[in-house]
Length: 543
Image (cartoon, rainbow, N blue to C red; front, side, top):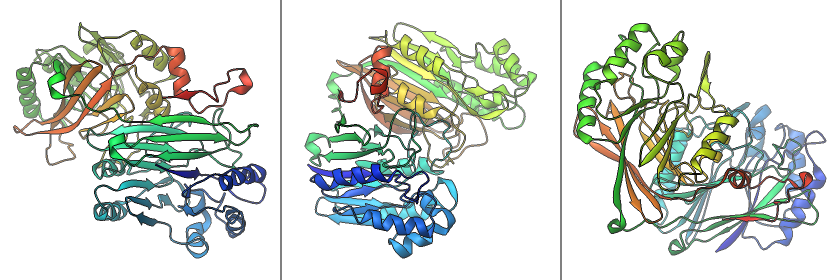
């Protein structure tokens, strides 16, 4: 095990948003600790000017530990990316020693808040990781958040190609990803069934701009590199404006998969999306073929996550109603943005069913959520809906719990991560803490699946549209669920409509442990300092 320090978003400048005394306090703590090295995850400066860089260098010299830095979006303002190279060094780095490799990447785009890694850099990262020994512990650092972060408002300043980044990091078995950018501490465990990864976001060390109740902070990471110990990562967040100094700890350890002999077949869910029924973009032959394949597979339920129609016209809804009747299993349809154009808000309930549909049987319970907004490409779930779903599912001890909506919650490969849920950070953090076993969405036309914390997330491709994004063309997802003594084991497959081919998108283990809403809310807000409202959680530990 080794220990590293983590700081980010110092925003060093003369006056303005920079809290110099808070920064100095953090440096004094860092210098007292036994750390292998310190990582600064970007936004060293506030506006990237020469004055900012000169002051930043003098403040960095106070840190008496080995220091690794990567730039953030603020460092690339005002041609600051060139100042970085002249005054600090390379904007990306590779550090390697026996048993360990760390790669730092510049994710900034000059004078823009959002970020991008880019295909050339992705290929470079892949090459570096492939050259490393298979047994190496792998860390990748970049400024912008990889996954949506709670308590940060509208998710807009993201990595545009974060879906490709996420896939690459999981494919190459990266164990730890470190980000900054959003001025709030957060962590997730993520897996595609083979690679297991912890994603950590650092808060701001010394900027006045804070989010929600978290103040300025630094962090310590204790990292266990022995794979037999499941790559344990202990994250300790230290708020800098509390006296005496306190810390809040969160542990990350992946559960072992159950033995195949322990598994019992439990349920089968078919997840379809983006049928685009209409005259313009609809492949009726593909739809018909998919219906026959799905009927033969005998699923417990078919869940359609939106864009049933192409443009919400009367004739499209009439046609969709007739075509859906060809399925044998129960069908649940959640509206997509195309279904909510023009008269869709009236026609969908009339021809298809409720905008927020519900289904249950002895095996599973499904809550559909209309994530669409009027005249807006983006979507939203809303705090009241989140609370209702979490409260209702906290009572489900034996049944599989599923929620489904149209808009993107996590980034998907080969797509630009732009049109998402406005509140995706809060939704992801709230929905993955134990009460929801399976989350389905379908905005982007590509099959993909990962597990974040305690929830499996499936994105379906297009079942019958000509707007496919892979050589597989039209596809849908099939989720096979098995029971084991502690919960569920899921295999998510992508099924090609025009052939017999299928691809496993991931296999996942869910240990069922439902959480009452008040306890769930406490876990969701792990790093929030609430001492000023008489809720002293700062010394509690969550595992």
